[in-house]
Amino acid sequence: MRLTVVGCAGSFPGPGVACSSYLVEFDGFRLLLDLGNGALGALQSFCDPRDVDALVVSHLHGDHWLDVVPLAYARPHHPDGRVPDPLPLYVPDAGPLTTVLRRDVDRLQAVFDVRPIADGVIGPFAVRFHRTDHPVATYAIRVEAQGRSMGYTADTAWLDPLVEFFSGVDVLLAEATFPPDDDHVAPPPPGLHLNASEAGELARRAGARRLVVTHIPPWADVERHRAAAEKIFGGPTIAARPALRVDL
Image 1 (cartoon, helix red, strand yellow):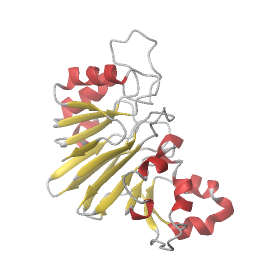
Image 2: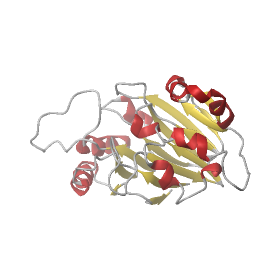
Image 3: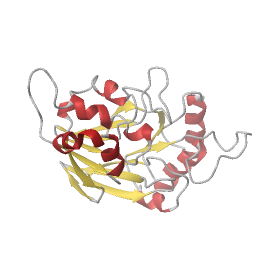
Image 4: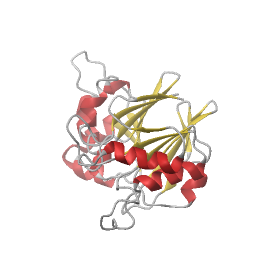
C-alpha cells in the first residue's frame, strides 16, 4: 500500500500547496481521499484523473471537496475520446454537489456514481468510517489491505473514540491545524480541529507506528507543529508535503 500526499494545506491553498487530497494505491487500484480546492491540478502529477478508481469525500467543507466540480469536467472531456465509467463517489450528503451542479445534473449522474458513506469494501480495500467532532457531518477513515492499515482523521476536535478506531494503524494521517498546547495564544474554538500536541497524543494512545501531520494552515510554522506532535507521540513523525510518498 502506498500513500501519496496530493495536497495538505489547511483551510485554503498555500503557495504551491493544494488543499487536502491523498492518494492511496494498492494492487493497481487508486483510491482518492478528499479533493480540496487546487488538488485536481496537483493530482495530474501522479495520475490521469480518469484513472482514479474511487473517491471518498470526508466532509463537505470546500478545502476537502471543491475540486470535485472541475473533476466532473476533466473525466469525460479528454481529446483522446476515452470516457471512463462513472466514478464511485462516497459522500456524507450529495445535496451540496447537486446544488453546485444544478444546471447540469445529468453531468453529475453521468460522471459520478454517488454513494453514501458506509463501512465496506472499495476495490482491494476494507474501509471503515467514524463520525468526528466538526461542525458538519465529517468522517474519519480507516483503510486496510493485506495486513496493512492507515488512518485519516479528516477534520476533528479531540474525540476519545478515535483512539480505538485508529488502534494499531501503520500510518496515522492526522490533522494538526492549531498550534501546540504550549503556544501562548488564545484558546482555539471548540469542536473544530486538533492542535499539534493532540495529534501526537492521538497517535500515541492509538499505538500508531508512524504519524504524518497535515492540514496545517499556510501561515503556520510547519516544523514547529511537526516537532510538537513528535514530542508527545514519541515515534517517527513527518509533516505532510506535496508529493510525499509513504509506503506501508
